Amino acid sequence: MADKPKQQRQQEPQQSVLGKALVTGFTAGILWSGLGAIAYYFHFSEVSAASFIFRSFWQTDWTGTWLAEVLAILFVGLLSLGSALLYYFTLKNKNGIWPGVFFGLALWSIVYFVLTPLFPAIPSFLELNSDTWVTTGCLFILYGVFIGYSISYEYREFNETANSYSNEGRV
Image (cartoon, rainbow, N blue to C red; front, side, top):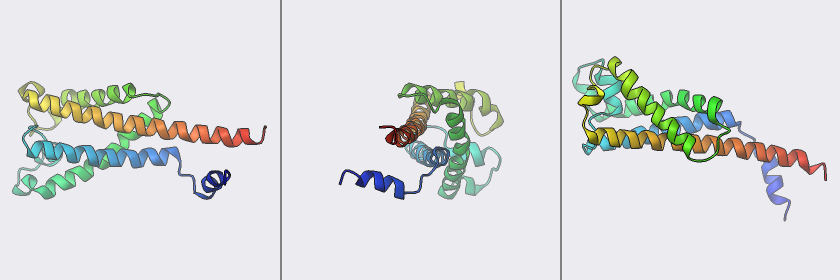
């Protein structure tokens, strides 16, 4: 009975840590931009994913619909693959919550201070209200922690499992 977990691990196909990081990134993008859409709907924020992606470039009626919001959320999920790769290649071996917090804050700063001029439908940072600052800041922090903790955990688990398999024959 003690060998059952070992057998189970050997039978399950090992998904690479990079593959899990990509799944984590896509999931995080959909989850947190979806929560951002809810925050926008309840007026906690003046911006949403559709504001950035669609309303900045097309001034049509459909960009104010839920279809545009859902498409924007899916697009953010795809963009989030890039940030998951960035975290994977730079911070995957960092443990704890703080690397994710700083990663989320860095992304928030890039989006609201560097990229905002590229999106004409979004007011400048100083024109946004404090509710938007706090709400989006918290969402980006949670996004960063979700990505960071998940990727670091998978990386650590993969390395511990690989080390335990290599040490089994040395007893």
